[in-house]
Structure formats: structure tokens, C-alpha cells
Image (cartoon, rainbow, N blue to C red; front, side, top):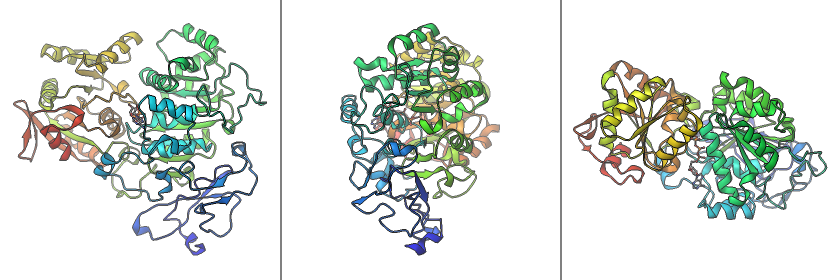
Length: 560
Ligand SMILES: Nc1ncnc2c1ncn2[C@@H]1O[C@H](COP(=O)(O)OP(=O)(O)OP(=O)(O)O)[C@@H](O)[C@H]1O
């Protein structure tokens, strides 16, 4: 083994259950670069001797003998390096990093760990999960939950609809709030640390009201109706004084909100986050944008020291700016992906590239963000026929729940009128509508009263409408990252989904460029006489039965 340590190309992820020391990842070579398989070895910082199977964590009963040091020493005083399923979820025990793109693999076996109990979550939480119908964790949950439970700061990157929200919520809820692990060894700061009564223990920030509310609903569902008050929404557009009153009266442990509103209430002295133990920035790459800069600064300045809280950054797209932010806002963070945990210091400046993919024009932050079950098409039409093409597309696909994206708010209404005039139930959704209007439209869309939601970038991030079977780009997205987030509103959690970009002839080169950057095929198609026709193919089909994928059209669209 010592001879293997000379090259850093092939690495083993091992020693995963060495949690209590401040761990360091040492790259260890076990084979040649040509095999393109990465492993990572996590070795205790102190352990700089020759590398052995034991030092890599493959010993079945090795006792960690050194005392704990640093912040993570508070977590557990002595830890056994076991390979029990609780300590080591299957996805992490498997050191091989699989190549992306094996659609069958993902569709047939989207989950790695067999149950949530394998991940070390407390019984109360598991009971609640089961009663809500969550039985098997997704790959990213299998990787992220134990990593956060082992007290690591993380950047979570995984494709849209892969379950990132629960991947961070569950470890948080197992540490704080009414369902927390009664035997948790993580000392709360009020056990002598001087935590004040009204201090919030977890702050979750999201870039839009819809996403903020969606996260609140997810927390409430898991907590159950009797514990709803443990979480408080602080989203913009809602009544601020009511939010402030609720903070005072209910003393929630978790707040979820948009940056502006959280910063506002914090500046007014009504929100105390200095004792915060978890800070989550969901859709973090969006939160880094200029619009949120001031509010984010305020929030980060008031959530205590990074060494005293866990910081979780989340997005389907992780450009290098996020890695940089993680280095400055978190303490020794790791990048968690579906089947891989990588120390941030090993992430190259080009972003978290999957080395198993060919280096091309691909945009690393976008190319791993699309669910493999999605199929992509484009259709060329004249500008004045775009809305009609959308209507024909919806009918030809027999799509039931459609999100159509445009770039400018002003044009949304016109499109809605045109669709309604042709008998399609449609509505617009954008930031200029009030909170009530927005939530009414979302409700109608979710319960099937509306067939087409015409919207702008507001709805591209995080929105989870599992029934959405078709996304249409009525305007081209500005880049491949925006394409990825829009496209990700369909094909959630292994479901089939179709994305159609309607564009002019002069814009086809942009589609081709995004195709390369995203590393997916975007086929040309047409909608004629109520039928969906893929150019260059003889087959043509005319129906769609949504996510079940049993119709001929879906079979064709999804198997091309
Ligand atoms: N283990 C699970 N079993 C079944 N359903 C799950 C599981 N985990 C999450 N889900 C469901 O999968 C859907 C997608 O999850 P989520 O919104 O967290 O995805 P995401 O990765 O955050 O997507 P995006 O990048 O678009 O924000 C949700 O409806 C969620 O309730």
C-alpha cells in the first residue's frame, strides 16, 4: 500500500465512519488513471503513517484511540470504526464512483440505502417519515444524511428532483426540534453554552417565496400537525408583523425564509440567530447573485461563528463561485454528490467535474444537474407562431401539467390570453403578483384546474410539482444553467419528463451549444396534425399519459 500513495489519480473513499476527529482526506492511488475510477481515503489528521486497510477504515472493529480534538470532538468521545449499516450507508461503502448517464441504472434503482434507519436517523423521525410515505432514501440522501450527522459542513450537489431538501432537513431534524434524537451526543449550547431562549437553531434561506413556503410545508409534514409551530416562515410579501408575532409567541427552532425578509426582521432585532446551529442556503448559486448581496451579508454576519454551526449549501448547479463561498462560510466542508463525497480542496477551479465524463465544451456546473430520465427536443417555428406551437405541442403530447417559461414578465399575460382563447386553461405566475395571487395560482395548477402555467425565471428554481409532465421553453433560457433548472421542473425523482424548446431558425445554434454544455441530446421535432414527430424518424405518435410513460408517444419520446 505505501507504494500506492505516490499518485493522486485514483482514490478510495474509506474511513467514512471515523467521525469524531477532525478528519483529513488523503488521496490514495490504487490503480491507473485510465480506469477513471475515483476513490477517496479519509484518514484521521493525526494518522500520517503508512496507509493500511485499517487506516483506510476497512478494519471491522478498530477502536479510535485518540481523544477528540476541535469542534467535532464534542460530537462523540469515542467512536468505533465499524462497517455496520448504521455507520456506513451502502452508497458510501461502495467506493466506486459510477459514471452518470446510465439511464436504466437510475430509473431502475434510484435508491442506494435500503431504509432511512440505515442512515442513523432517530426512531421518532423514521416513524414520521414512514407515515408520510418516505421509506427509501435517495442516493443523495444516502450520502448527505450521514455526512451531516457526522458533523461535517457540506455542499450538496445533485440533479433536480433528486431529494436534496430531505437530504439536509432530516439530519437537522434529528438534532433539533421535537423529533430530535433523545440520545444525541451533540451538546446543545443551552447545556451550559449560554444559548438564549429565543435563539433560532436553524436558519434556512431560499431565493423565492414559493420555494421558501415549499420547504416550510416539507418541514411541517415531517414534524406532524402537533409540532408545526417549531418552524416559522419568514418570506417576503407576507405580513411582517404577523411573522414577528409568531416568532415571539411560538418560539420556533427553525426559520425558513427569503433573504430580504430574514435580514429585515433580524435588523429590527426580532430574530435572534447568533446561537444558530444550522445554516442552510438552498439554491445557493442563486443566493450569490447581486440582488441578494446585502441581505446575505446581514444574515451571515448574524448566524454565529462558522466553527460553531453546521453550514449546508445546496444546489443542482454548483459553479466554482459556490465552492469559493463554501470555503469562506463553512468549516472544512465536503462536496456531497449522489455517490461521492469529496473534500472541497480537491474540487478543481472549473467546478465539481465528473472526471468520468469526456472533457469537452461541457459546463461542469450544469452537466450533472439534469435527471437522466428527461428527454429534450426543440422545434423551429416563426416568432409569430410560437404560442400556437406551444398549444400544438401540449395537444400532441397530451400533456396534463405544463410549465411554459418566458424571459419577460410583460409577455406572459398575452400568451395566457391566446391559450385560453384556444380552450386551454392557463394562468401567469410572476413576481409582480401578490403573495395571495401567487399561492392561489400554484394551488390551482397543482390540483389540475390549470393545464398550463406561463411563467418566468421565478418558477425555475426548486419548485416541486411531481405531476408536471412537460416543460416548454417559449423563450430560450439565458444559458445552460438556467436551462437545467427550468428543465428540472419535470422528471422529478425518476419520473419521465419532456422538455421542448420552441425557437426560431436563427436560434438553433444556441440550442446546439446548450446541448454540448449539458451533455444531453436535444432532438429536433415538429407538431403536425395533432401528432408529435421527431425529425429524421419515421415513427410518429399522438398521445401522452404523463409520467406513467405507458403511452406510445412517451415510449418514443423517452426512448429516442
Ligand atoms: N426518499 C424519498 N422517497 C420518496 N420521495 C421523496 C424522497 N425524497 C424526496 N422525495 C420527493 O421527491 C421530490 C423532489 O424532492 P426535492 O424537491 O427535495 O428535490 P431537489 O433535489 O431539491 O430538486 P431541485 O433541485 O429542483 O430543488 C419531492 O416531491 C419530495 O417529496
